[in-house]
Length: 363
Ligand SMILES: C=C(CC[C@@H](C)[C@H]1CC[C@H]2C3=CC[C@H]4[C@H](C)[C@@H](O)CC[C@]4(C)[C@H]3CC[C@]12C)C(C)C
Ligand SMILES: C[S@@+](CC[C@H](N)C(=O)[O-])C[C@H]1O[C@@H](n2cnc3c(N)ncnc32)[C@H](O)[C@@H]1O
Image (cartoon, rainbow, N blue to C red; front, side, top):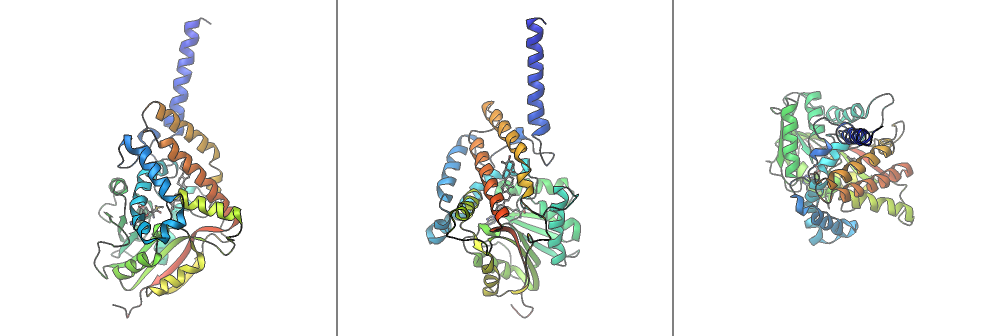
């Protein structure tokens, strides 16, 4: 073969490979969020690295962030930074629902996710005409599933403005914008009137609150008397041993890489709910057998992680993605290992479910 023909063939193969990696393989779970569209929320490209460094130095010692009042106050702002850094990567590599779900035999991740979300609507006995609150709504995957399944209207709140815009765009695209509304705000002090919701839920979101009492207290305030609240909580289980260095390493890794001001223990949740006035109707770790492991999705993704890190490296080199994306991606990769360890050892669950009721006779 002539040298020129060989060079053209190599160039064509190279371009085809780049196309395959970035557009075909890179467009992971959700159509519409491709690797080439990765942004770092509302952070401008030149600030990504600095913001990541600030985030990392704040959450490096998670327990300390919750124990002093001054640093606990800073948590929502750092959580906002975290979601600026990770929202697009989550959407690209996971989908529009930012949570785990038990695996379902013979069903896709997407279906397992939907089933886990519809369970919330069923527990709430949600109906057409009900007004539900989604506490920490992300880009609204659960909100759309719950509104579609139950016929209810849903109002979501998130601290991150970039997520508000993503969620509103997805709601419009799904034709659900007349029943799904999204508000930017802090769930520790919500911009809603007392007794204005028929029901409320939070899916893997309240773990970001330094004090669970504060967010549960707010949900209690905005619920109508008799209203139900379902929460899927991230907690350590009774198998966790604080004197086991492997356990401590996994739990710290989960906290650092997920913007958590210290995980709570499973047995603390119901008593905190009672402390703010709720009745506890049900409490169950949805990860327990017969449920199948939620962490297999993370483990099965090894090749995808390798491909994704190559994609972000190439896109950063080409200056399509901002500097700092590789560091954020690497942090998420490590977090996935800690989460898997937490799941395999049984010391951690992301789906400790509580079903609570605001007593009928309360104000
Ligand atoms: C509830 C929270 C988020 C839970 C999960 C949705 C996310 C936790 C860890 C995330 C991920 C880890 C590895 C990433 C991978 C390296 C990348 O290539 C593609 C995206 C990941 C799979 C990413 C996806 C979302 C998570 C599973 C917390 C924050 C309270
Ligand atoms: C892991 S995501 C889960 C999102 C959604 N529940 C889902 O399952 O797709 C956590 C969400 O909680 C929100 N959040 C965290 N702290 C918050 C706060 N103080 N006020 C409002 N939202 C907050 C984040 O912005 C994010 O949307």
